[in-house]
Length: 534
Ligand code: FRU
Image (cartoon, rainbow, N blue to C red):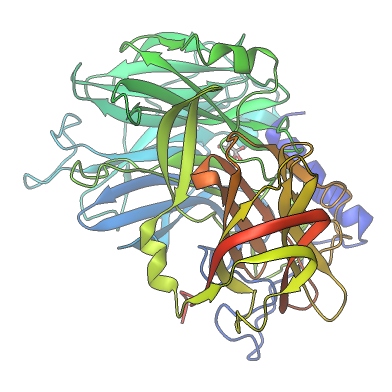
């Protein structure tokens, strides 16, 4: 089943299961203060109204981080795709802008990227200013329905007013689908300074294709990668390719992000990655990385279930130097039936990526961006303690766990079992646990009793697990809770888990627990966080 029919089928199944006939109309009563609906994230990006999926066109220009996104403004389920648009000066506080790209005679506007064309290679700039160029997939829904195979192709649009208005290029599509391949989409483009050319990567069923161009309009095929590597449990989507300096050694390696639906380790959609070299034509997997992706299990940027289609920002200034990532905080398994009506879904927190050589090979580390510290409205130290059973944090942390950042460092007991972590709960007896089990060497996130999950059998079927990379005796957990989500950055970002949940009353109690045996909390700190939508 292809994506369009698959998502429609999912929506329909959700409706059948819950006897609705139409997508629910958003509730717009005066009681709903702005961004205060039940389950509305307070410091994550979410659209004002209606449906959102993938982040698109992430580019930094003239002091602004642009975030475009897959958007259907007429419903809270997937439909004819537009590019919604928002900008931010810090990746934390967002200003909504009008829709940037509307469907047209060539099709819906599927996922893609944006760049600053600094040298005006495209000739589309005006008044000596570099244009912003967006590259996206045109998806011809009529063609698909008619049984054609060439209904997806790559097009561009340009803006000469800091992304406020966009014109589609008259010569679209710039990468036609001459081979007539279904699933031919999600272009991510970057300027290669050494070779003075644009490099494009996009996803085609079970592999990615690389193309090059001098001007973003005329493209030449370079190579394929991926048929024989990584996880192939579903369709490949939303790739990203970029170089990174390996920490400590300083060598340069290339990272290829690749989203896949389904096939992720805990079910549904997720994002794997590959580390290797790119010579301007071919991507070659690093031999030290290859063993970990031969077993079809893949290596994943996030082991939670709610981080999909993430890519990195283009044109971050050299003096900043960070590789900044953000994903869609949902999963195609249930995204269209989660219990919100006015809007559907949010993005993950923005993250800074780094690349390190570990005993298991090259690995990406993710850290929440430092700009998020501006959200802290206080700081509470949590004292060192020996934990057995439950430890209520309320006396030390007089703050709601609904909007909270937490940093904890535990010490594993020598040769004893240890299964410990953080528990959020409410007066309805709903609870969510995120922790570490030393016996299995796995972090885990358990939302099976976290509240409403009747909307999908796939939502709360199992506890989600993630392998631990580090073998340190100290286990560090950096956590963010935002009403309906948890993000764990463990061991300095070596293991990441993002999960959403829907308690019927906000979580208002927070405890540490040691399920078996004991564990020592070495130190901790809690930071109540402010919302961004006031
Ligand atoms: C990923 C994806 C992309 C596609 C878009 C359509 O979630 O399926 O491959 O471009 O969503 O909305």
